[in-house]
Amino acid sequence: MENQKLSLLAVVSACLLALFGCASSGGGGGSGSDETTFANITLGSGQYSGYYTMRSTIVSENIICADGRTVSDDSEYLDTNAALSHQGSSLYVYNFNTGEVTMTGSVTGNSFQLSSISGDIEGNLLITGIFSSSGWSGTLAGTITSGTFAYCSFSSPFTGTRSSTHPYIRSANHLDKTSRHLLSGEEPNKESISEFERYFGIPMSSH
Image (cartoon, rainbow, N blue to C red):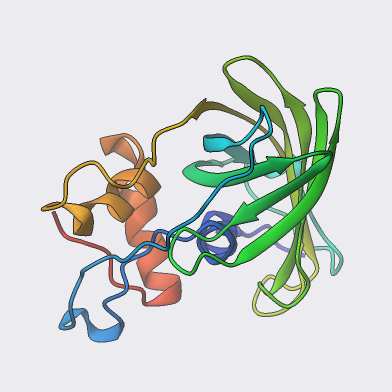
């Protein structure tokens, strides 16, 4: 079968947005409000509770599709944030916008695993790794279960830092800018944002 580039950045970004939240609540068409709303989330008292960045690069050799599709030697960059609650040995990831728990897991020592809750996304996502004094690192992996990339699996290392400060509330007058800033990361990733919008039709802030 002829090689083709699979734009898993768009697919994985959609999964992470569904799990972690932060997208504009304005709706379709680009003509609605771009105001972003956030839930009141209370994190647990455990030492690993906090707001984590997640930075990862998906490379073609770490993508496998059950139907035999292959990809070119390209890579895609991801940069997002997660609200994680630690209580006892239990871990929970909350959606920033809805306040709902979207991933559950556990921690033993400083080793952890988190799994997406069935039905929240069109795929299964697993995050495993270790906590450190400054953040976390490990492997972001998943399988897409429907759509164009059904039964394509990926696995990628990630790193990130932890903060006690909510990452999206930086300025009350600029909340509509945060989803684009934090999904795109550095300016060179603007092309990835355009690709995300083309696949999913979700308007992002133009600022």
